Amino acid sequence: MPKLVLSMDGLVLKEMTLNKERTTIGRKPDNDIQIDNLAISGHHAVITCITGDAFLEDQNSTNGTYLNGQPVKKNVLRANDVIELGKYRIKFIADDAKPGTSQSEMVDTAALKAFEMPGVSTDVTAAPAGPAPTETQVVAAAARQQPGTPQAAATDLVGVIQVLSGANAGRELELTKSMTTLGKPGRQVAVITRRPHGYFITHVEGASFPLVNGKAIDAQARHLDDHDIIELAGVKMEFFLRT
Image (cartoon, rainbow, N blue to C red; front, side):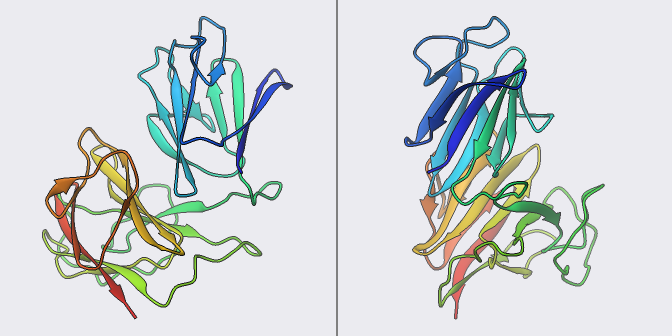
């Protein structure tokens, strides 16, 4: 089970196992991790564990929540990530973490379109370029497997996303990685995780939740069935299973 290690100035103050779905962090005593410091908001941040993945979300705190030195609103946690709240540090330690490695290194890529985010390398071959992307850009991020770490969950069926609308209509993305992030940063983002018992979609960023078959999903991971229709960041996509 993953755990958190709270420290300040290199001194470990508390260790806590993430054995519940929601773990709250803040100054008020009703938080799971209470940090009695005026720089910390009453309810500063929350960590949500869903189907084996952990998500950090800032709760509109006054001074913000930082992850590895960068301000975040909502982000997937990876092994050895460091959450920064004022002078306090919270290290996320995953079950299968090895010293100095990440549970899944996210690489922004243009798997659906020849579109590369500035300053980020890609390791997935893009489909042949079509018309220049517009408001309906779909940016996919796939997790790269580290040498020696477990591969993605084995299954006879591989999930596939096919774009149904916009400039990329007809393009396909095979969900062979353990985690794939879809959407438009700053507008709406969701993550699809591959598990032994199927594929699940979870909302990550954006005021509105993605739609599956015309209905908004909630904060929980939603299991994807064959031929489900996903609407995300202005793009309609079909999820299906391929042998």
